Image (cartoon, rainbow, N blue to C red; front, side, top):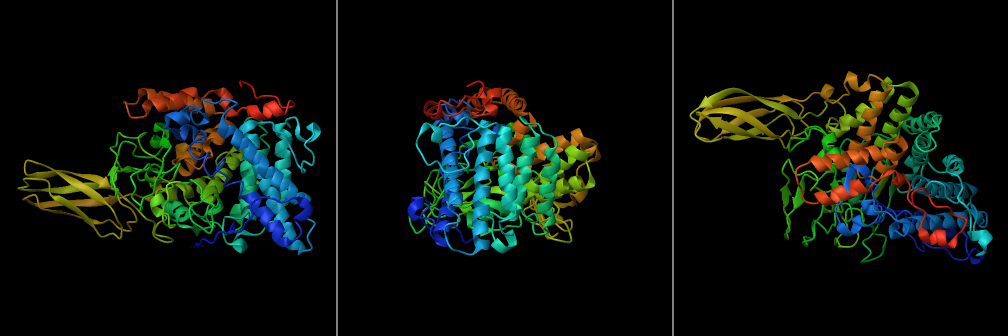
Length: 603
């Protein structure tokens, strides 16, 4: 891990006329920055996509009434301003890329550097088209600058999705030969070979699923994921929460975070005004002015379905540490300074997304409107899960695929926190071996030793004896069983021992990997546990052909759940979703100015 030094630190981010631009290497790099800047637009990862466009699908829902009247609540129309902005911004980015590619030979410069710029630009253009084709299906494929405002230059029909995907593959494969190795680049803010290969795995998985259903692409998806793994450069960060603290703290860890959207500054004071809303739109809600916490709307509440995917859904703690990091187990008090108030075990959909916590932001002061938190586009855990998915569809469960899923699970359960060597454990149970005598009240339970941390328990007393020890926090990072002791309560003689979890309890059981279908289900659920709220879920459900099924399942869970605040909003969100929502409508504005466009079914 290295301290973050943003590379998108030069202006301008827009283009001048080709007649007097693209004359120097520096101008090419400025133009490339403008293409990169598309990603951090407020129409994309800078704002709208963060809990406001329904991309979480069965992972969570938007609580805000005004958002539920838009695509954020699956109340979609062709006039939706966020859908129109999404379309427009991506085509603006494509236009920038086309101009740069058309003029890339103009400067007299080092050919190796020119090749890198061309490769990054090709990849970004392809990624923009990937975002478009996933959400709209057939889209106009524009590969050269539009030189005229005439109808022939601007009024283009939709290109079949199959052809768009073919261009995406061609551009990305060419880019892979041109861009640098990630260890030479030194961070995940810039396109690397690892990033291209990993996204190529994602693209091929999309092509293997709905609507193309070209199953032969599973082989290619596996091959591209295997290239990332085979570099030997990447590995899982030992700590799941550290991944997201790094994004907030401007620290790069390219071994785990292969590609990320960079934000820099808070748009309030210089020199770099490139802030976004990561942690504001999709953080833990807070609005009472504590400068250490930072304002957050916190649009997204978790679904009951997602929460229940983790172990111990009926307890305040989970052995899977991802649960209480991805889904915040506390709310902030409506005070300044703020305090953390834990939720009751029954309070599930009242919670907020916990991955992007503004308390870890290092840029000060924390302003209400923007943050400098980066957003993940490709993590190594995703690559391992994509390999497992593709391999399973080809061969059924294999030791390699099972092993990669188990590695992701082991990290999620904190088993890697002690580094190489002795794995980290939590306390599984506390066994009462002696109740003691003369206890008039519950003694204090102290858990010490074992090189672990944060474990806690309470005692129950009846008839002068300790009758039970109730684990309230299993702790983590234990190497050996800690000592349990009792103090106070007026009695003496109580004794108990701690039993630790084992590595084998995390590994997938035989029935989970018995065949292709059972392992497929495991992988699909593991992607939700690992990648929740990273804007991949809706596309996953669509390509698996499970979108309407999963959304209806969430609706049923909400209907049968005890009443909770925002329950009606959850029902609106999940009830509005239907088959037509697999694709968004072509924006009405573009339908109006381009008679060659044909609307998607159902809109």
